[in-house]
Length: 190
Image (tube, rainbow, N blue to C red; front, side):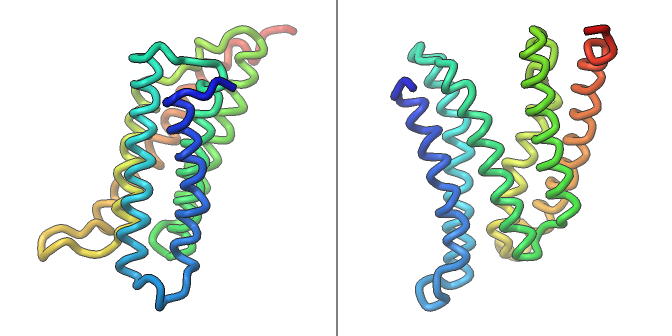
């Protein structure tokens, strides 16, 4: 495992996962609900930024590695799955929406692994629909974590809820798209 800046950022994202959960289990006299929400929002937003930054730095510094290519999406999926579990526990997101998003991530990861084994990994490479789904998730989740209205005119919970429903719709659409791309290979003779 090459230890470089992009991989270090990915590891920091993974280490942030238990911290995100712990924020909501510390005693109430340590952190108010507002402070927990704010800290969780900042933590998740920081993780989302490092997701972009580690890829950028890996390309810019020519520090791309097979291990980094494996670990980066794992870190992303873990962070999103854990954040969704926290949001469901806090009753800020639907368990059905969380199951759709997490289930799709598991199914598509398995599909990509299988396609790589049969030598057709490029046919299920990340596309624009998947990137749009990720963007809506990465904006929705911090809004749902923050939860509290910002002034009289902006309700992060409402906007975050709309965006997480959009993310779930895009999740299903992108899953259908990837399954369609893989289906010719699935029905070929071994």
